[in-house]
Length: 293
Image (cartoon, rainbow, N blue to C red; front, side):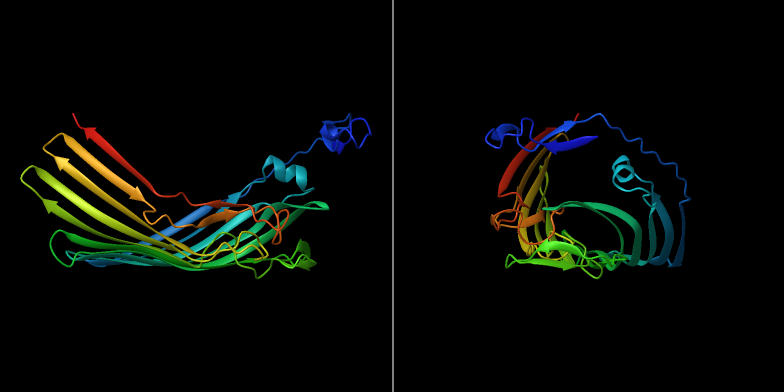
């Protein structure tokens, strides 16, 4: 086993205070599990332009080493998914739209508090819509839209987890009913593009507008990550039969956005009122030249 302590019981030797080291006792965790997983799907062709489809599946995730160590009897994590969708294709449009409901049960999770580590077992329920649509209103021009709406919440955990609120006070709350951390309810990408035929080959130009809605960095919705957008541009030139030149630029307006916070800490502050978070990349432009044999 491993413990934390001062190596010499002297508080003035800061370098070895709260040191972590092994002691003579041992643990022998073990786990032997089995569970079935399955999937079933069907597709129905309505006519040559459209079809409908559906899928039901259940998957399992057996406990990992850390789960066995942290929990005396870790559950088998199960994922149940139901999905239905519709596809339509014509010379001027392609559309794939689907709706789903996903249920997770027996999810183990460890969080770090000032008082030590807490091990949770919970679930989640998510309903959502996915869409991928490409429209070609006239020759050489296309407009693509991809995005999703997701309404996901934690479930099956009624315990009270302590945390530090934004005003610095100590609070306690359950995660059941809270939104899934780091998951926006709405996100989408819109990409217009135009193909220019030339005497020496072709050139394709495009621009992508991306929007990511508000999310929270922790499971108690105390660390708001906000929403953000960014704009990307690109161009591909096919020169003759062999040469290809590609120009790509991301986050051209140099927006500031946060992708995730410290999900292992509950509450607002992770030290001194500061939220530790990961930002999106700043403006970047690169050029690639390729010769195809």
